[in-house]
Structure formats: C-alpha cells, structure tokens
Image (cartoon, rainbow, N blue to C red; front, side):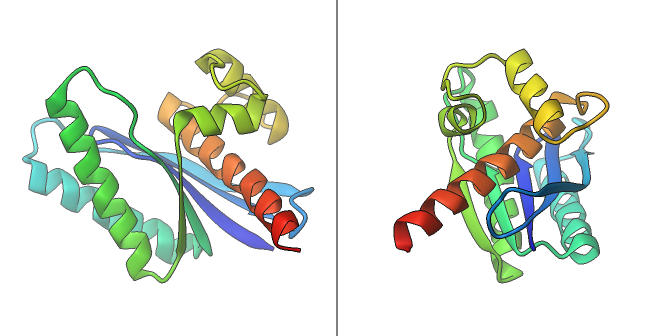
Length: 166
C-alpha cells in the first residue's frame, strides 16, 4: 500500500487528505482529511509557521509516502497569489524535508483525471470525490474536498506512469 497526502494550498485555509491505495490503484481507502485554518489577524510569518506546524503534525501522525500538491492558477489579486505561493512553498519544503516524493498538478489536470473533463465545475468534482471514495457526504470546506481530488489525481497519474515505464 502507498499512502498519499493530497494538499490544496492556501493562506487562510489549507485542505489536506490522506488516501491509501494498492499498487494497481484499484483499491483506495480514505485514512483522514481536514483543513488547516489560519487567522487573518496573524502576520504572514505567523500564518506560515502555523501551516508548517500543522503539516508536520499530519506527516508525523499519518506518515504518508508521497505528497501531491495543487499548482497555482491565475488569481486576479496579486497579493493573494503571492501569499498562496508562499504557503505552497513552505508546504512543499516541509514535505521535501521529510524525504517524500512530491508531485504537482494543475486544476485542469485534476479535473481531467477525476471527471474526464478539464472544465468540470466544483459541484461535479465534489460529487465524483464523494462517489469514488464512497463517502457519506461531500467533505467541507471545499478546500478539503479539493485536497482529496489532488490525492486521487496522483493515484491515477502514478498508474499511468507505471504503465509507461513497464
């Protein structure tokens, strides 16, 4: 079994999800999921420190083998994209320092992997996550569901890469 950490990076909310899968990817099991929330009243360094501490706690508790992180997409607000990029950087660095393999996926790749359509809307994505993982309800907040989608995309991509290499 391979344990995968999926992450939807952000400054205010970081979604995360842990999935186990067998080598063929035919069996997937939800281990845990949730989100990290930081207060807008904190300074950027305090928020980044809080995110780092929480990611470290997740890594220590669940011991994933690989991480999959959503890449940034276009933001209208330059200040927002900078802070999310900072959070994404500390998340990647934290996973890297734990000797994890790290994969990165664009929102288009994630949607394509789960629904077969790169322009799927959020509701369609959430239904797919709920159905594929056999969950009773759609994980909330949206960032948590997005993190599970990133992990599922990685499982699908791992299988494709394995087939190409064999």
